[in-house]
Length: 134
Image (tube, rainbow, N blue to C red; front, side, top):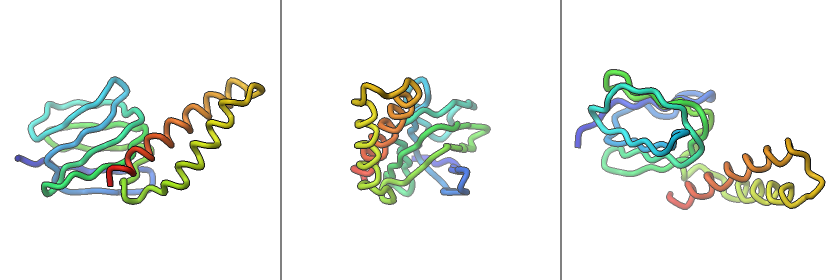
């Protein structure tokens, strides 16, 4: 399988810079799979799992927000948050999930609190799902 250059850059710095054979990410309009020779494109990232196939091995991650671009064969993933599955603190994600669920069950919660809790819950579920794919 042919490879392409991939960079994964977050606000915290460069997380990956190397050759990949496949990248799958969740965009705001659905999953996007990228192989060598992909057409040029730019897409906003949603909230979901990412999969990077490199050296014949699949690596999974929680990937939230940002953008992905393909320009002349070079793929750049610039997520707001990106955590490799083997680096996710599952107990922290579970605690965040529980706190979000408590707020969502609170009848006195404001609309803002509910929206923030829904986003927190979704992030926690994405992180837990990615961590299960170590």
